Amino acid sequence: MSSTDTAPARTGGDSADVGAGLDALDAVSAQRSSLGEVLRTKALPPLIGVVVVLALWQGAYSLHLTSSYKLPSPLDVWHSLQDLWYQGTLFSIIWTSVWRGLSGFLLAVAIGTPIGLVVARVRPVRTAIGPVLQGLQSLPSVAWVPAAVIWLGINDSMMYAVILLGAVPSIANGLVAGIDQVPPLFLRAGRTIGATGLAGARHVLIPAALPGYLAGLKQGWAFSWRSLMAAELVASSPDLGRGLGRFLEDQREFSDMSGVLLGIILILFVGIAIELLVFTPIERRVLRNRGLLAATR
Image (cartoon, rainbow, N blue to C red):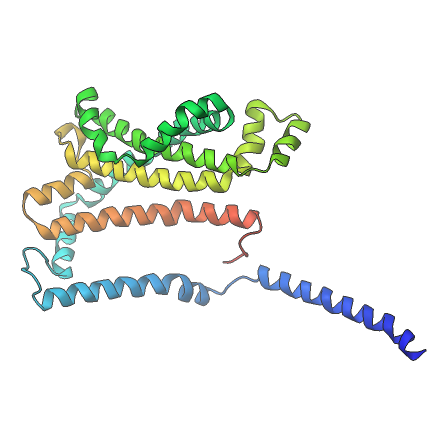
């Protein structure tokens, strides 16, 4: 009798324990990290990596593994950066390339997105154009520079043409890959509520394909930046101004290895900054909205 009396109580206790455990899990997932923890887990590892690279670089310079002409010290590169700062040209050089890269990338998004939608949803178009987009994505961006110079001359139009030819295929392919992963149930639900055509693409297809589309956008930016640097390295004209690629080539012509390394570091810095300031927050927000990322500070 006692066993039957206590069984419901034990079952209720187990249910309460399970509920408490689920509540605890929810509390942990929603807990925000402290500033110190964020700095320790996010900022400290990259900082240590930079320090290790600088230490190895300085060690190679101090051991004279090669001539200082080929491998200047980190301090020499710092002095080159100071020279640009005192000349007042540092930010103008960076901004010239950043403006071209971002404006060309946005134009590539405006062109690549509708192309991706059509290729993903119209089977004959996909059969005809899909392999071409895949092939264009694997083509090195610098290969377009000579053709663009002959077609358009050495001007800003040539720069943007090279950016578009490098970035549009990646953006379109990313959207196609994202749409291919959208569950058919979403499409049927969209048609049920009347979301067809452009409305369906805006409210169903693109939001559902957002993770793959975002990956394509990130790759498209990488192609835009690399394409622009290739164009600036090859093409030279007073009308184009002086961007990072042109600065890098000028230092090569002057046989200034400190300036060459500075140009490489600045190009790398801009690429990383755009990734961290633009794409990483968007990616984290998308993942958090889908419940794939716990809320953090």
